[in-house]
Every structure is written in C-alpha cells, then in structure tokens.
Image (cartoon, rainbow, N blue to C red; front, top):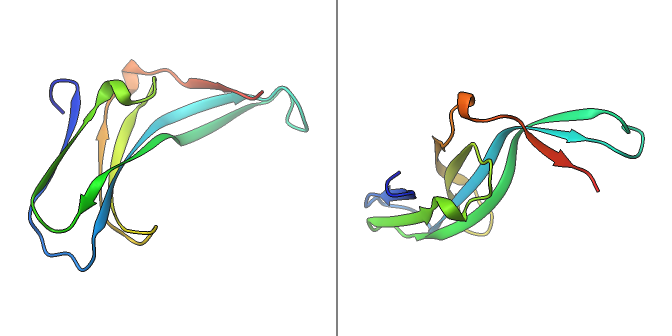
Length: 114
C-alpha cells in the first residue's frame, strides 16, 4: 500500500484458465439495531461484512500490476481481500488479505434497518 493506493502485483505464472482479480472490502464488526419484526429492539452483531466488490482485471499468466485508490472504498472499511478466481464464478485459485485499520482505530460500524 503506497500513496493512498492498494498495489497488487502478480508475477508471471502458468495458469490453466484466465482468472478474475477481485478486490473485496469488508468491515470486521458491525451492529444492526432492529426496529421492526420479531427481532425488534435487538442489536444483531455481524462479522466480516462485505462492503464492496470490484473486478480489477483478468490475469492470464503474464506479470501484471493493478492499483486501487483507498478513496474509492466505502467508509469504515477494516480491510480488503484480493481473490484470483476462475472466470464465471469458478474456483478460487489464490487469495490475500490486507488490514487497513487496526482494532484500536476502529469502532463497530452501526448498520440500520429501514
């Protein structure tokens, strides 16, 4: 991570089929106050809530570089995961994660039901 950007570097490697390179942002903890229904008045605690998903490109085995601006991520994001996934929602070939905010820097995100 440099200059407020996430850098993804892929070395040349033999692959059987093209892979989508996907960036997923998440919040490690969130709380939802339920205002209606059978859970009305309760606070639900959720973990590793996906906030956004972006396809960075397609990897075909050649050395490639991708960058993604931190300002493009939703607020309160705790971290990101990079997936290398076979196209058309296939198997995950590789994964990596990056923590963006330490536990001391973040408080639980409050999600609200309509």
